[in-house]
Image (cartoon, rainbow, N blue to C red):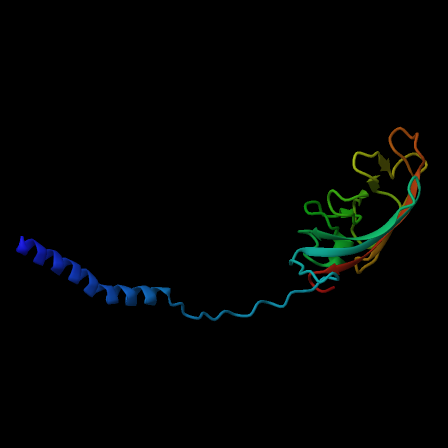
Length: 197
């Protein structure tokens, strides 16, 4: 019996003797070494203070309507474009569509905000003023009717500057039934690109 007690005491003492070594190894594992990293590249700030990705342009926009609506407001659209590559000048000559070169989308409020301005110009190859190849609709409210800018009797004009700034003016836009009061208005914007142009 005494032998068993002596062996047990030696096992316990052996375990306690190893404790300082375990603590030293644990503390060493928890100690972190400082790492140095290169400073990040200076981002191009947008007009709202946000950081633009290399393939983004930002449109500070506003609209004023008359006829079916007399609303007016301002908004910001951030658009990603593989063609424009973050350049306002390129978006004015190549378009601002994510997939299709030569397509320019009139800036619209964010998704699920209204009005939704789903108007585009196709066949863009250079800045200028356009009165054709423009199509789309403007929806004033969720679940509301879509006013077509190509309705019979409607007129449209899209001006696009070399720096990406521009405006879209329309009159006589109507829903498909043509029974509602027509909508007219102007949407205007200024462009900030990730490339700083």
